[in-house]
Image (cartoon, rainbow, N blue to C red):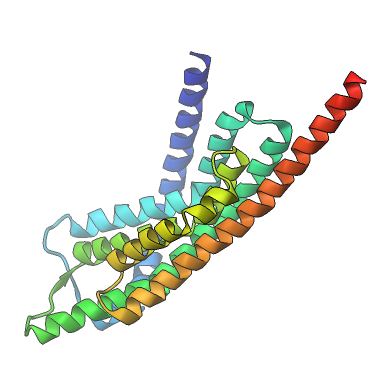
Length: 245
């Protein structure tokens, strides 16, 4: 019950900060929409509203998305605060350091997804539309839905290194296990890359290579964390022997 009460308080605080961030984001959403509208590929097409609510709906969606991105560090801090009681002091300090790292990786993933993967996917789909002789009429809601389906998975994929480091710190993963499952992990990452990228070889490779590099970086970081854990365990073992003597 104590844990549930603490969880409730942290959820309430997260909701309050989220609402405050959303209200602030409402004042900047118009500028963000104009920025997106005047950048390719949006600048090459006309946005249409197919329902009276399309404009309002997209305005709110973007405001909420901006608020979520801004409060990601706060959300991660709340998660850390909730689980830190189950960690040792060294693990608490190490896990706290992951928060800015996770935020930076999320931003890098967003930049890579929006400026690299999304234009490739949009270019491929529009070329297919023209080859079929179809008239290009894009709604603003459909445009942002298509963009979100690509940008969000890629951005989350960039969280792989910090997730692996955190799970290694909790002794759930280790570099030996990651090395054994490398082939399977490669296959899963390539399948994900193929699903979120256009069905052409160059696009698959352009997305698969960063994903595989992220996995290898995760393995290297896991080794670093694991070695520190072994040294820490050895020191604790030696100190317990000295105390017994």
